[in-house]
Length: 517
Image (tube, rainbow, N blue to C red; front, side, top):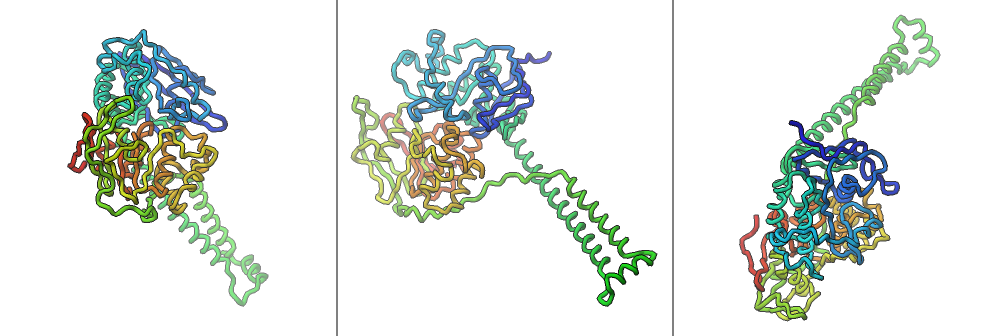
């Protein structure tokens, strides 16, 4: 029995101004498929979902839908006073999400209870994690057969993630954009990659996709190496034939050009004829070279060699410590009570805990955005906090100009860093104002990395980043010469980056001393 077709898209082209976002020959979604949509920030993933949902009419092509999908849209924190979609849309397109409202009357009370937010349905103020759960509750309360999910894990804590995983298992058909590799592995039966405006489909979950992609890259390297070796061989043959032809044409020193011409005219085997034959043979080799199918060299990410000594880093063994401190907000909400912690120099510390436990509050106490006696930071620690409003970015300047205006490193280091964050040469010339939200976050990271900062403090650094960018950050943070303190709910990211864990729980800060592997 054949699967029922839910979506049929053909020859879809989308452009923003002069920039072509993607041109897709064909995309079919069938009943029972759980598709993970992956690709770089700015590649067009969110835009593609909106095209499939009928919210955007493509510049050309057709989309036929055989059922009505429900759409969980991606939202970010406040950027410049409005809510923005932070994957693909240009800055001018963000305002359309400003007035998003829940359809509260259609939300199931049981779903609200399962998500532990029954008392939040009509609340005037909710946290980021609670807002995500409310919007998910609307999706889970729907009976539509197809669901589009754009970063549904944003701001969810560990408990929220577990509920989300269980609920999503009940959906029969979905298209999912997520930077959570564990979620993609758990749910997906197919991964579709949007890269350089084209779609490539891979059977299986995210790990299967990575394995197939790496095998494809290995084949690409083999093809490129075979191509370059054969081209070098033919060029050598061509040059040898050209040299041979010149030697044949060369006349003796004591013979004039007129005499050489007369000799060739009366000779049974004139040298000019031999030379022409050799030249023709060389031309044939040249034509073979020109007819060769060109194999592009796979992209290689450059190594970064920043001079971390330029940041004048502290030499203390402990760079931050809190001793028996308490903290409450003005409304009386108690966050910490007689809490203590220590952060060692050169460590990479993950701060974990449930939503509302006080993780972001701890970061603000460390940075001095909130004041409280009992927390000390060594004098030479130069703290860099990734601001959620990305206020450090000058949107009138290019990507490279933004980085260089704060850089204490050489321009070559800054360029290598941007390449590692998947900003390639053309991207470096872009004005920051046209970057997608995820690209802006990466630019803010880059500015911190090359600045005088020697202690990074990051709140959910992987939120709204694409998977290739997260993997690039994992590599960069693992090589970082300073101290790193970050909040994250991404278990895979914590496992690969952190050396220590501070768990915020019940007003205390529990130190997990075992080094994370």
